[in-house]
Length: 93
Image (cartoon, rainbow, N blue to C red; front, side):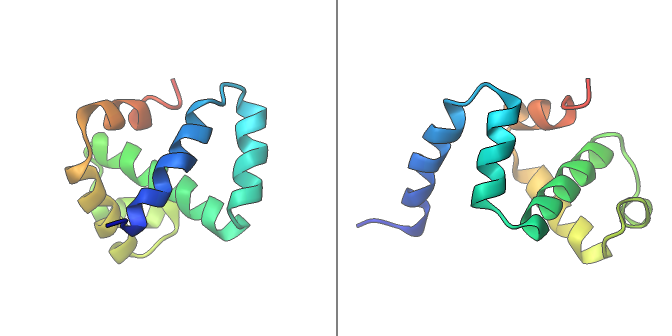
């Protein structure tokens, strides 16, 4: 039986084949709305700040989101693999 998550595999494959940041940005702009792109940027910022030990309320104020958004990001952060967190928390290096 197929699940909704099965649809992510072909998308992940397409994304993994792109090495040029400009091409990736163009593809993401086609796939996602400006609002969705902002949400992804905010989620990455939240995860970076969580990794630095920043308190949730401070993250919410700095990113300009509600505390519930930070809490959802914290939940995702706790469930992420080490390799994923390493990629996300070293994006600005």
